[in-house]
Length: 111
Ligand code: SF4
Ligand code: SF4
Image (cartoon, rainbow, N blue to C red; front, side, top):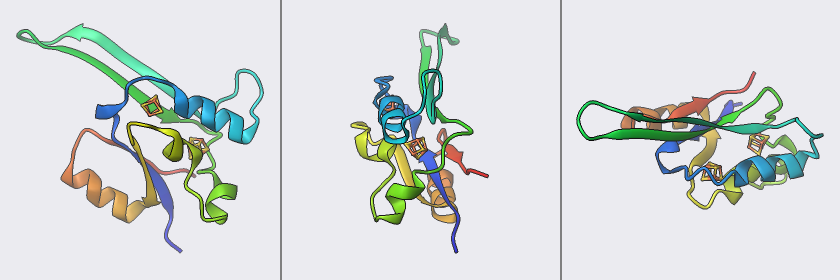
């Protein structure tokens, strides 16, 4: 059976943290536990007049790729609730192909 993962196209992440909340609610994680956490890089100055500021949602050890939801034919809740459509769920091989075609994404494969 194909192994699934998440492809994270963080270029469009607004840092809204909806994925964090949706994941936490779905799994009823306790205070301080997260299935996905937002990392913030920057802002810092680049050569020339450019600046860099990136938000990157990062699945944690607790991410189970929403196994229960997926078994019922639903998408992972972070995928469903992200208005910017940052996360894509599917077989690793297919996601890797998307990654080759558009760099500066992150491919998450759970254990
Ligand atoms: S991945 Fe989507 S839901 Fe999560 S912080 Fe970024 S824009 Fe918001
Ligand atoms: S796939 Fe499910 S468990 Fe993993 S980060 Fe997204 S919402 Fe959380």
